[in-house]
Length: 118
Picture 1 (cartoon, helix red, strand yellow):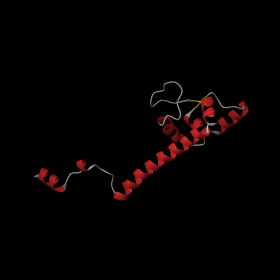
Picture 2 (tube, rainbow, N blue to C red):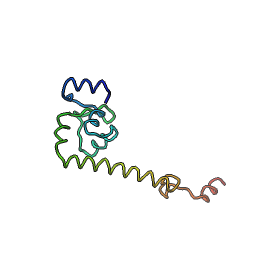
Picture 3 (tube, rainbow, N blue to C red):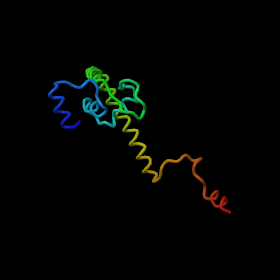
Picture 4 (cartoon, rainbow, N blue to C red):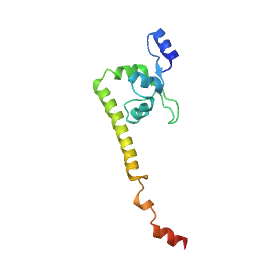
């Protein structure tokens, strides 16, 4: 959140009714790139019916209410952690092989390449 936003919220003494992805992440103490993970896991629901690539807003009242639920917070924490563990695990398997994991059907054998050229 920008400094001017912080000052504005301090003057109001409360959160705005609608939060952007960045603001929702700040309130939840996570990163903005974690919010889509929570949306896809159905732990957060954007307001209205925004298009997939559109700007999404979240209800500040709903987020504040959810934050009181310890089990919901545990689900959020576990979901974000599992997502990044899986993503980092895929990167590690990529780097161990030295090349991207390609299904065997997609790999051409050298003799097939030579015979095709002849």
